[in-house]
Image 1 (cartoon, rainbow, N blue to C red):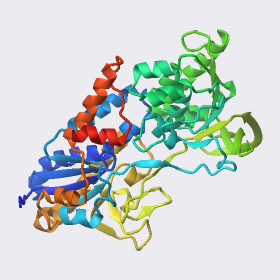
Image 2 (image 1 turned 45 degrees about the horizontal axis):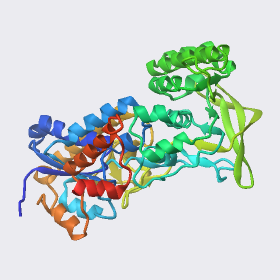
Image 3 (image 1 turned 90 degrees about the horizontal axis):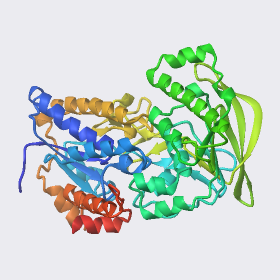
Image 4 (image 1 turned 120 degrees about the vertical axis):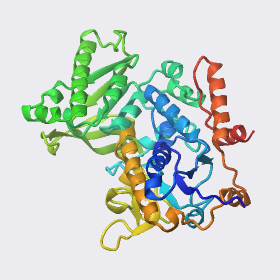
Amino acid sequence: MSETNELRIAVIGAGPAGVYSSDIFLRQLGKLGEELGLGTKARIDLFEKLPVPFGLVRYGVAPDHPSIKFIASALEKTLDNPDIHLYCDVEFGKDVTLDELLERYDAVLFATGAVEDKPLGLPGSDLDGVYGAAKFVEWYDGYPTGAREWPLDAEEVAVIGGGNVAMDVARELMRNADDLKAKTDIPDNVYEGIKANKAKTLHLFIRRGVAQAKFSVQELREMEKLPGVQLIINEDDFDLDDDTIEEAGKDKLTRQMVEELFAIREMAEDMEDDGDTDFEGNPADRKYYIHFNSAPVEVLGADGKVKAIRVEKTTTSADGKMTRTGEFEEYPVQAVYHAIGYKPATAPGIAYDERRAHLANANGDGRITTEASGEGAQVRERLYATGWAKRGPVGLIGSTKSDALLIVTNMLEDLSKAAEGGRVAADRDPESIDRLLASRGVKPIDFAGWKKVDAFERAEGAKEGREHKKVIDPEQMRALAHA
């Protein structure tokens, strides 16, 4: 037995939230550990149910986001740390239980992210041709257990949502396959699917006004540069009153977004004036309509299939309050994609806050509780949540980093108050978890295994003059990692 005296932390989920938290924990322990009576050494074991790490960065973001490469590279540098041990292909609740982790670790941190869509909840949402964004994203990102084919036979499509995922989905539906392949790591099945895509007209419906959308400027700039696509707007949507302009100006990000949307309005006018062209002045063969103050109320069908979408015009006040007008319009479409939010994953043995869609935790401080809310909610010692598992499906990478710092601060505070300087796990043998998993026939993929998968993806990409080409079959990933 090789018992050690370092702190032992288990992190569930190797996406950005889990990796950032691991890094910040080690940094903060190095800074504050002596003062808190904890020492400065810790071993962090990072458990991931998929065969590869990086969660949302690899499988939740459109492949044509250039910034994602930098984030993935930063996460990889963090994982290349001898104090962080990666255990991919190990599913919490199935391959290892909460009690087994608490026996071996001083604290357990959940960073489990989100993979499910919030339900659309409109009449007709069960028709054939209505899709949640999450499943479509899984397809085009090559998620290991996702769909391998996608029905892209609708010539007219609708996308519902006023955030970045809606923008990603709309952009991929309007994408030129050869352009996408040249610039990204998409696998062959996605290239073939997008090449065969019949969509010629796309309607993006945003319930509130121009100043209340939640798009990043980066997303808008990517929307502006779609080969063969004409952007079409309704000028009335841009008739903002003084109060709305003043309110939008108070927040830097909102102001930048509104400025970019006005640039898109001018661009759309130029495209029309030039004879229905794309951003480079070439003839456009696809039309992308952007509708603000438009709330879909029903998906209309025939023979069980989508045939149209019914939309109510709304108005939005400066404070973001939306009012329905009773004016309706119908648009012929054969497919509807909804991107109205994700539902973060549940975790076996952990209470879930259904109303706010995250793991139950005390006042948002990341300490897991026995129930969602109310007087009976008690903090459960040694259990924590971070990222979307803690706060619900809101915020980007920046929020995930600030979350991680808050939760790590709370963890260190609690560990410093615990007996034995936070070292409370009964089984302190670092190899104990390996023996337990081996006894169940579970073969984790470690960081060296991931590097083998990554090297193969780079070599396959290089054959086609690309930086990377994704492997999507989990069995192939396992074979590569264990070779």
